[in-house]
Length: 205
Image: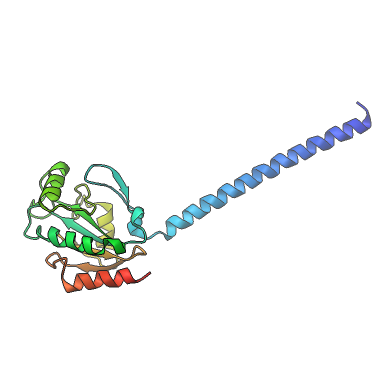
């Protein structure tokens, strides 16, 4: 190989190495940027949206699917004096769901053993007796050492901390995922206080 051929071969090799190096650097830079964007989005996500729970059929539901909606989170029970509130909750849901309102019901057996059944039994009771349309989740604990992480957040780190008092405690969440109100268990779903809170949250962007 003459001198000119050697120089040409060396030049081509150098260009190839440089190209590969730049390609790797660009690829790494893009991946880092995308990873950073994902991390930032997760960091800025409202705490409520970071939880995943099973629905009453055992299918995982990521709560971030409800982003942009006004939510009413309720711990429920089938054999409680407050159980007829299911009727009021269903009425609320029918009135406001087209405006972006959702009710998330979490059966729990923490008070007076008033939700002793299996998920299948709970589902049958709620859908047969009350014909519910809103999301019903698998039974969880909302108080004590085995409290579900969602309710750990609601009762310890939300703007309205404090132990769940009884069945049908209610938390109102705005479209940004912020907890904006907490209602006592005995307050009926169609009370002026709750309806007004929902309406005000729905009108805000």
